[in-house]
Image 1 (cartoon, rainbow, N blue to C red):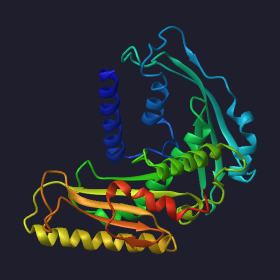
Image 2: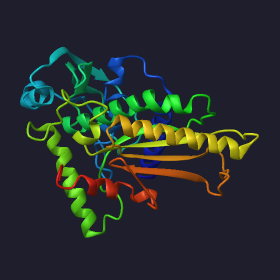
Image 3: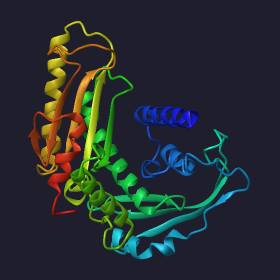
Image 4: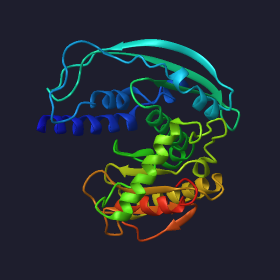
Length: 313
Protein backbone atom coordinates (compact mmCIF):
# COMPACT_ATOMS: atom_id res chain seq x y z
CA UNK A 1 0.00 0.00 0.00
CA UNK A 2 2.83 2.41 0.86
CA UNK A 3 4.49 1.64 -2.45
CA UNK A 4 1.26 2.43 -4.29
CA UNK A 5 0.80 5.77 -2.51
CA UNK A 6 4.43 6.74 -3.14
CA UNK A 7 4.18 5.79 -6.81
CA UNK A 8 0.98 7.79 -7.32
CA UNK A 9 2.44 10.88 -5.67
CA UNK A 10 5.65 10.70 -7.69
CA UNK A 11 3.82 10.06 -10.95
CA UNK A 12 1.34 12.90 -10.39
CA UNK A 13 4.16 15.33 -9.57
CA UNK A 14 6.20 14.26 -12.58
CA UNK A 15 3.18 14.49 -14.89
CA UNK A 16 2.33 17.94 -13.53
CA UNK A 17 5.86 19.19 -14.10
CA UNK A 18 5.99 17.70 -17.56
CA UNK A 19 2.67 19.30 -18.42
CA UNK A 20 4.00 22.69 -17.40
CA UNK A 21 7.31 22.38 -19.27
CA UNK A 22 6.46 20.46 -22.42
CA UNK A 23 5.58 22.29 -25.60
CA UNK A 24 2.58 20.65 -27.24
CA UNK A 25 3.36 19.37 -30.71
CA UNK A 26 0.13 19.73 -32.70
CA UNK A 27 -3.53 20.76 -32.49
CA UNK A 28 -4.54 17.11 -32.40
CA UNK A 29 -2.28 16.45 -29.44
CA UNK A 30 -3.54 19.57 -27.67
CA UNK A 31 -7.08 18.25 -27.93
CA UNK A 32 -6.26 14.79 -26.64
CA UNK A 33 -7.48 14.23 -23.06
CA UNK A 34 -5.42 11.08 -22.67
CA UNK A 35 -1.62 10.83 -22.50
CA UNK A 36 0.01 10.55 -19.09
CA UNK A 37 -3.12 11.47 -17.11
CA UNK A 38 -5.25 9.07 -19.12
CA UNK A 39 -2.81 6.22 -18.63
CA UNK A 40 -2.57 6.97 -14.91
CA UNK A 41 -6.35 6.88 -14.63
CA UNK A 42 -6.58 3.59 -16.51
CA UNK A 43 -3.89 2.00 -14.35
CA UNK A 44 -5.38 2.93 -10.99
CA UNK A 45 -8.63 1.04 -11.40
CA UNK A 46 -7.99 -1.77 -8.95
CA UNK A 47 -9.17 -1.45 -5.37
CA UNK A 48 -6.20 -0.68 -3.19
CA UNK A 49 -6.82 -3.51 -0.73
CA UNK A 50 -7.05 -6.37 -3.21
CA UNK A 51 -4.54 -8.10 -5.46
CA UNK A 52 -4.80 -6.93 -9.06
CA UNK A 53 -5.22 -9.30 -11.98
CA UNK A 54 -1.96 -10.19 -13.71
CA UNK A 55 -2.98 -12.64 -16.44
CA UNK A 56 -4.42 -11.89 -19.85
CA UNK A 57 -5.35 -8.64 -21.56
CA UNK A 58 -7.75 -5.93 -20.45
CA UNK A 59 -10.10 -5.54 -23.38
CA UNK A 60 -12.44 -2.59 -23.83
CA UNK A 61 -15.03 -3.34 -26.49
CA UNK A 62 -17.82 -0.79 -25.99
CA UNK A 63 -18.50 1.28 -29.10
CA UNK A 64 -18.72 4.81 -27.69
CA UNK A 65 -19.85 6.28 -31.01
CA UNK A 66 -22.98 4.15 -30.97
CA UNK A 67 -23.50 4.29 -27.22
CA UNK A 68 -23.22 8.08 -27.04
CA UNK A 69 -24.41 9.13 -30.50
CA UNK A 70 -27.25 11.26 -29.06
CA UNK A 71 -24.81 12.95 -26.67
CA UNK A 72 -22.33 13.64 -29.48
CA UNK A 73 -25.10 15.14 -31.58
CA UNK A 74 -26.00 17.43 -28.66
CA UNK A 75 -22.34 18.37 -28.09
CA UNK A 76 -21.68 19.23 -31.72
CA UNK A 77 -25.20 20.22 -32.88
CA UNK A 78 -25.25 17.30 -35.32
CA UNK A 79 -22.31 18.81 -37.21
CA UNK A 80 -19.35 16.52 -36.59
CA UNK A 81 -17.07 14.33 -38.65
CA UNK A 82 -15.45 11.11 -37.50
CA UNK A 83 -11.78 11.47 -38.50
CA UNK A 84 -10.75 7.97 -37.47
CA UNK A 85 -11.49 4.90 -35.39
CA UNK A 86 -8.33 3.12 -34.31
CA UNK A 87 -7.69 -0.05 -32.33
CA UNK A 88 -5.00 0.53 -29.72
CA UNK A 89 -2.78 -1.82 -27.73
CA UNK A 90 -0.42 -0.74 -24.96
CA UNK A 91 1.68 -2.55 -22.39
CA UNK A 92 2.57 -1.30 -18.92
CA UNK A 93 5.56 -1.98 -16.70
CA UNK A 94 4.53 -3.92 -13.56
CA UNK A 95 4.42 -1.65 -10.52
CA UNK A 96 3.07 -3.53 -7.52
CA UNK A 97 0.50 -6.18 -6.76
CA UNK A 98 -2.28 -3.64 -6.16
CA UNK A 99 -2.10 -1.99 -9.61
CA UNK A 100 -3.53 -3.68 -12.67
CA UNK A 101 -0.79 -3.34 -15.29
CA UNK A 102 -2.01 -5.93 -17.76
CA UNK A 103 -1.79 -4.97 -21.45
CA UNK A 104 -4.76 -2.93 -22.62
CA UNK A 105 -6.64 -3.28 -25.87
CA UNK A 106 -9.10 -0.47 -26.54
CA UNK A 107 -10.58 1.79 -29.21
CA UNK A 108 -9.76 5.45 -29.86
CA UNK A 109 -11.82 7.91 -31.92
CA UNK A 110 -11.21 11.44 -33.20
CA UNK A 111 -14.07 13.81 -34.03
CA UNK A 112 -13.68 17.07 -35.93
CA UNK A 113 -16.06 19.94 -35.23
CA UNK A 114 -16.23 23.75 -35.31
CA UNK A 115 -16.46 25.72 -32.08
CA UNK A 116 -18.47 28.85 -31.34
CA UNK A 117 -15.92 30.98 -33.19
CA UNK A 118 -16.05 28.75 -36.25
CA UNK A 119 -12.58 27.37 -35.47
CA UNK A 120 -11.93 23.77 -36.43
CA UNK A 121 -11.14 21.59 -33.46
CA UNK A 122 -10.61 17.91 -32.71
CA UNK A 123 -11.99 15.89 -29.82
CA UNK A 124 -10.07 12.65 -29.19
CA UNK A 125 -11.43 10.04 -26.78
CA UNK A 126 -11.33 6.32 -26.07
CA UNK A 127 -13.40 3.68 -24.31
CA UNK A 128 -11.21 3.01 -21.28
CA UNK A 129 -12.87 5.55 -18.99
CA UNK A 130 -16.20 7.33 -18.81
CA UNK A 131 -17.02 9.84 -21.54
CA UNK A 132 -17.92 12.43 -18.89
CA UNK A 133 -14.39 12.37 -17.44
CA UNK A 134 -12.87 12.75 -20.89
CA UNK A 135 -15.18 15.67 -21.75
CA UNK A 136 -14.22 17.43 -18.52
CA UNK A 137 -10.52 16.84 -19.18
CA UNK A 138 -10.81 18.03 -22.77
CA UNK A 139 -12.57 21.28 -21.84
CA UNK A 140 -10.28 22.17 -18.92
CA UNK A 141 -7.12 21.45 -20.94
CA UNK A 142 -8.40 23.35 -23.98
CA UNK A 143 -9.25 26.48 -21.98
CA UNK A 144 -6.10 26.42 -19.84
CA UNK A 145 -3.98 26.03 -22.96
CA UNK A 146 -5.72 28.96 -24.67
CA UNK A 147 -5.30 31.34 -21.72
CA UNK A 148 -1.71 30.23 -21.23
CA UNK A 149 -0.77 30.99 -24.82
CA UNK A 150 -2.90 34.12 -25.23
CA UNK A 151 -2.46 35.95 -21.92
CA UNK A 152 -0.01 34.20 -19.58
CA UNK A 153 2.81 33.89 -22.13
CA UNK A 154 2.72 37.61 -22.97
CA UNK A 155 2.55 38.59 -19.30
CA UNK A 156 5.50 36.44 -18.21
CA UNK A 157 7.72 36.99 -21.25
CA UNK A 158 11.25 37.70 -20.04
CA UNK A 159 10.48 36.68 -16.45
CA UNK A 160 12.78 34.09 -14.82
CA UNK A 161 10.07 31.44 -14.44
CA UNK A 162 10.68 28.27 -12.45
CA UNK A 163 9.36 24.91 -13.74
CA UNK A 164 6.77 24.99 -10.95
CA UNK A 165 4.86 27.76 -12.77
CA UNK A 166 1.63 26.63 -14.38
CA UNK A 167 -1.79 27.42 -15.83
CA UNK A 168 -4.48 24.82 -15.06
CA UNK A 169 -8.22 24.68 -15.57
CA UNK A 170 -10.66 22.98 -13.21
CA UNK A 171 -14.35 22.25 -13.00
CA UNK A 172 -15.47 23.55 -9.63
CA UNK A 173 -16.16 20.92 -7.00
CA UNK A 174 -16.35 20.54 -3.24
CA UNK A 175 -13.10 18.99 -2.04
CA UNK A 176 -12.36 20.22 1.50
CA UNK A 177 -14.06 19.80 4.88
CA UNK A 178 -16.18 16.97 3.51
CA UNK A 179 -17.37 16.19 7.04
CA UNK A 180 -19.61 19.27 6.86
CA UNK A 181 -23.18 18.54 5.66
CA UNK A 182 -23.19 21.63 3.42
CA UNK A 183 -20.04 20.51 1.61
CA UNK A 184 -21.41 16.99 1.21
CA UNK A 185 -24.43 18.51 -0.54
CA UNK A 186 -22.17 20.55 -2.82
CA UNK A 187 -20.19 17.43 -3.69
CA UNK A 188 -23.36 15.55 -4.56
CA UNK A 189 -24.49 18.39 -6.81
CA UNK A 190 -21.15 18.79 -8.60
CA UNK A 191 -20.71 15.02 -9.00
CA UNK A 192 -24.17 14.81 -10.55
CA UNK A 193 -23.38 17.67 -12.94
CA UNK A 194 -20.20 15.96 -14.11
CA UNK A 195 -21.83 12.55 -14.58
CA UNK A 196 -24.54 14.13 -16.73
CA UNK A 197 -21.96 15.54 -19.13
CA UNK A 198 -22.22 12.29 -21.08
CA UNK A 199 -25.98 12.60 -21.53
CA UNK A 200 -27.82 14.62 -24.21
CA UNK A 201 -29.56 16.63 -21.49
CA UNK A 202 -26.39 17.49 -19.57
CA UNK A 203 -23.91 17.76 -22.44
CA UNK A 204 -21.72 20.83 -22.93
CA UNK A 205 -22.41 22.23 -26.39
CA UNK A 206 -18.86 22.38 -27.72
CA UNK A 207 -20.22 23.78 -30.99
CA UNK A 208 -21.09 26.97 -29.06
CA UNK A 209 -18.24 26.94 -26.56
CA UNK A 210 -15.44 29.53 -26.89
CA UNK A 211 -12.65 30.74 -24.62
CA UNK A 212 -14.72 33.91 -24.18
CA UNK A 213 -18.00 32.35 -23.03
CA UNK A 214 -16.49 29.39 -21.15
CA UNK A 215 -17.32 30.82 -17.71
CA UNK A 216 -20.97 31.22 -18.72
CA UNK A 217 -21.26 27.73 -20.20
CA UNK A 218 -19.29 25.76 -17.58
CA UNK A 219 -18.61 26.05 -13.83
CA UNK A 220 -14.91 26.37 -14.56
CA UNK A 221 -12.04 28.36 -13.07
CA UNK A 222 -8.38 28.86 -13.87
CA UNK A 223 -5.53 28.37 -11.43
CA UNK A 224 -2.31 30.22 -12.29
CA UNK A 225 0.95 30.05 -10.38
CA UNK A 226 3.87 32.28 -11.31
CA UNK A 227 7.04 31.10 -9.62
CA UNK A 228 10.36 32.91 -10.00
CA UNK A 229 13.82 31.45 -9.81
CA UNK A 230 17.00 33.32 -8.96
CA UNK A 231 17.72 36.42 -6.89
CA UNK A 232 16.97 39.74 -8.67
CA UNK A 233 19.27 42.66 -7.87
CA UNK A 234 16.51 45.17 -7.20
CA UNK A 235 14.09 42.73 -5.62
CA UNK A 236 11.33 45.15 -4.69
CA UNK A 237 11.23 46.86 -8.07
CA UNK A 238 11.31 43.50 -9.87
CA UNK A 239 8.36 42.21 -7.84
CA UNK A 240 6.36 45.42 -8.20
CA UNK A 241 6.83 45.33 -11.97
CA UNK A 242 5.71 41.69 -12.03
CA UNK A 243 2.62 42.48 -9.96
CA UNK A 244 1.72 45.33 -12.28
CA UNK A 245 2.00 43.03 -15.30
CA UNK A 246 -0.15 40.37 -13.64
CA UNK A 247 -2.83 42.90 -12.79
CA UNK A 248 -2.76 44.06 -16.41
CA UNK A 249 -3.12 40.45 -17.57
CA UNK A 250 -6.10 39.92 -15.26
CA UNK A 251 -7.78 43.09 -16.53
CA UNK A 252 -7.33 41.90 -20.12
CA UNK A 253 -8.65 38.43 -19.30
CA UNK A 254 -11.66 39.86 -17.52
CA UNK A 255 -12.50 42.20 -20.39
CA UNK A 256 -12.10 39.28 -22.82
CA UNK A 257 -14.73 37.27 -20.88
CA UNK A 258 -17.14 40.21 -20.53
CA UNK A 259 -16.39 40.32 -16.81
CA UNK A 260 -17.21 36.67 -16.18
CA UNK A 261 -13.69 35.52 -15.30
CA UNK A 262 -12.97 32.95 -12.57
CA UNK A 263 -9.28 32.75 -11.70
CA UNK A 264 -6.95 32.26 -8.76
CA UNK A 265 -3.40 33.59 -9.24
CA UNK A 266 -0.42 33.21 -6.94
CA UNK A 267 3.01 34.84 -7.20
CA UNK A 268 6.19 33.82 -5.40
CA UNK A 269 9.66 32.31 -5.63
CA UNK A 270 10.53 28.69 -6.22
CA UNK A 271 13.20 28.96 -3.54
CA UNK A 272 12.29 29.70 0.08
CA UNK A 273 12.34 33.48 -0.32
CA UNK A 274 9.80 36.01 0.93
CA UNK A 275 8.45 38.73 -1.31
CA UNK A 276 9.29 42.29 -0.38
CA UNK A 277 5.87 42.55 1.31
CA UNK A 278 7.01 39.95 3.83
CA UNK A 279 5.02 36.90 2.71
CA UNK A 280 5.98 33.87 0.63
CA UNK A 281 3.23 34.51 -1.90
CA UNK A 282 0.85 37.17 -3.12
CA UNK A 283 -2.56 36.11 -4.43
CA UNK A 284 -5.37 37.46 -6.58
CA UNK A 285 -8.88 35.97 -6.56
CA UNK A 286 -11.51 36.82 -9.16
CA UNK A 287 -14.98 35.26 -9.23
CA UNK A 288 -17.49 36.15 -11.92
CA UNK A 289 -15.33 39.11 -12.88
CA UNK A 290 -15.09 40.61 -9.39
CA UNK A 291 -11.92 40.64 -7.32
CA UNK A 292 -12.41 38.98 -3.94
CA UNK A 293 -10.20 39.47 -0.91
CA UNK A 294 -9.40 37.56 2.27
CA UNK A 295 -10.08 34.05 0.97
CA UNK A 296 -8.20 31.05 2.28
CA UNK A 297 -6.64 29.50 -0.85
CA UNK A 298 -8.00 26.10 0.17
CA UNK A 299 -11.54 27.48 0.09
CA UNK A 300 -11.49 29.40 -3.19
CA UNK A 301 -13.78 26.85 -4.85
CA UNK A 302 -16.59 27.46 -2.34
CA UNK A 303 -17.63 30.92 -3.60
CA UNK A 304 -17.09 29.70 -7.18
CA UNK A 305 -19.62 26.93 -6.52
CA UNK A 306 -22.02 29.39 -4.92
CA UNK A 307 -21.76 31.74 -7.91
CA UNK A 308 -23.27 29.03 -10.14
CA UNK A 309 -26.13 28.09 -7.79
CA UNK A 310 -29.39 27.99 -9.71
CA UNK A 311 -27.53 27.62 -13.03
CA UNK A 312 -25.79 24.26 -12.97
CA UNK A 313 -27.04 22.92 -9.63
